[in-house]
Length: 186
Image (tube, rainbow, N blue to C red):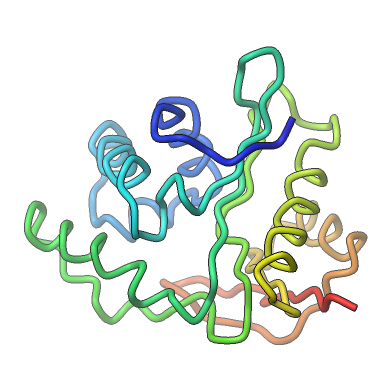
């Protein structure tokens, strides 16, 4: 079952978000300690009005266990959603990441992080979450759904292509090069 996330889901969802982000979690937080990174994301997942909030997350739950999540939001709001996160990092960790660029833009409903528990992969959960993200964006009136995929992540790239996402352009973000893919709602 796919449902909106709740603040209490943080212990199960945050590891999924960090898994999806990979090294970007370290780059964004400017922290190497995995436990501190987890604490930062738990803090923000439980809070409203930021990029990694439960408000911007759907979860796939089965038998009371969260097996996957998708984090998504209006691309036009990225700077406002990221601001509390950056302010917190600067205040508590001395990180100044204000010139990191953005992964999305106005006119897009952006699928930020899509993640499935490794033990549950291969069961179609990721596809269900992506479809739910597309429908979520459509419900909010968006006609373009977007995401980034690392250029060397062939499996994810093919999955998105099979789901009718097309590469709009290549994008540099936080030291990496990504396919900026879009899905147009018909």
